[in-house]
Length: 114
Ligand SMILES: [Zn+2]
Picture 1 (cartoon, rainbow, N blue to C red):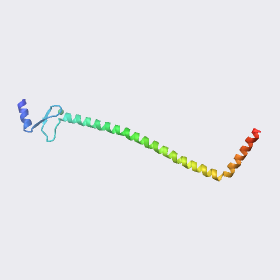
Picture 2 (picture 1 turned 30 degrees about the horizontal axis):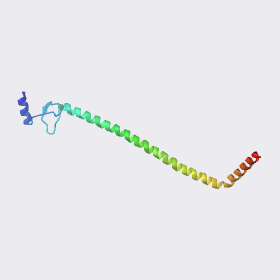
Picture 3 (picture 1 turned 180 degrees about the horizontal axis):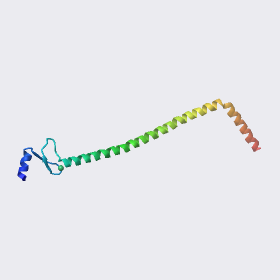
Picture 4 (picture 1 turned 180 degrees about the vertical axis):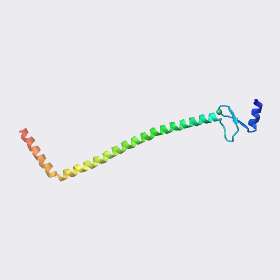
């Protein structure tokens, strides 16, 4: 087949030129690339998707780390309140005991100072 014949066939939609590598292949509606380029494109596409997924996975992981950290801080904060409340309650319930202990402690200190 010479070049004129090829061009004629292209005009008649019997053949197509690949848009990337200029390979000539049988005309198929909507088909712009030869099989090799199509395969290459698919590979590139897959690689791009893989990269995107990996990047997103990192972002996701970072986001999860952040949330976990925030939950930890919040939990600690809430627990501090609970602990403080518990200690307050204990002090109220044991005021007599604490006062007695403090009295004893002060007396002991005074004795030591004399
Ligand atoms: Zn091609």
